[in-house]
Length: 266
Image 1 (tube, helix red, strand yellow):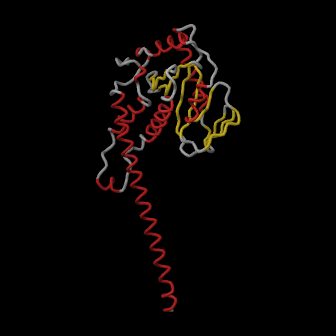
Image 2: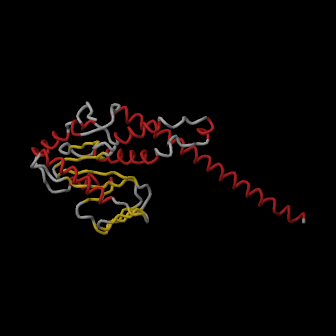
Image 3: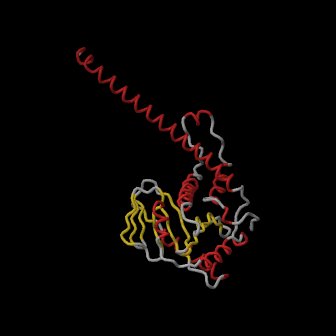
């Protein structure tokens, strides 16, 4: 459905996916005292994917906030009725870019043309990014004959290492830490007037579809609260694990100390 909301530029990073996450969490029974004591995660089994995706989009949003004023950034633009969205749409002197964020914590990524391996697993980043870029290019060109072609970008967060043997021809794969430098290093492609025209078009809420939402600031606050709970639960589990290791070590030392007595008794 069409939403009545402020201009789309006010949407926060990961807004669409956090909306889904919060709805899913409402179906999860609150943790009991013992579950909190032993550090059970507040996330439901179906919520983990949304939680990690939201963290990735927020991290990329923070990186994009470092761009100078001539770059315009939109976050979490909802498209269609399936719950899909454009993670970030960036309009600047270097062109128009549709960014897909993904978190691959402590994993190695190998890029060889259209093939992208995360560990031993092949992920269709290129195909998905190309499809999104073509769809947005079509949307712009239907209303704006002089609109620029949208380029797909895959932004990786928290990777162990990214090795690029060959960059794909139509999609850029970049780590979040290098994103702004790459964007600002591109040759000029759009004039200030072009950027203004495209921005005005994208800012029209009637183009996008979404669930009725909380205010962006409230959404981020709710996510921050959930993230704090997840972090505390993880820390609690870690402390229990360390305590178990200490007790196991003390038990083993106690047995070692008893061995001479056992041997002498024999």
